[in-house]
Length: 153
Image (cartoon, rainbow, N blue to C red):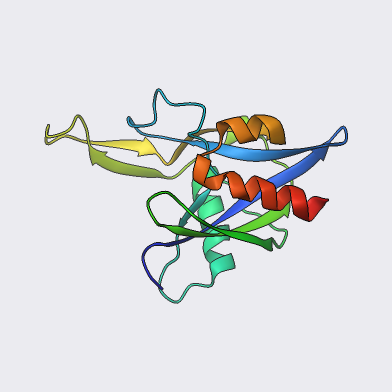
């Protein structure tokens, strides 16, 4: 599979007749001061030989620290701004957004300093109604919300 292929999961729940989705805010210095248009679904690269659903479940667990037990359903495919294709699955569920524990990545920071620092893949997560989610999600992931809304009717 090409390295530009990712898989992810949008977790949703129904509260008081409204749909809410769980979005994550990327960690690291580049995203530190960005909010609207920066939130995303947990997703990541599909490893060679890995099924799309398996990759989506693994990435969800790595980025949120929670293993899903329910089986997600295929939702849509989106192409992000940089050309990466994301196969998106959805599952209804619930978790404490304030209790996430994300895997970390390391990068040289500050740039050209020679110092490596670790940052969480997601520094926080939050439940949002669809209207708020539309304002907060990466623009290239907006079709995910449309597909979910259409699927749920």
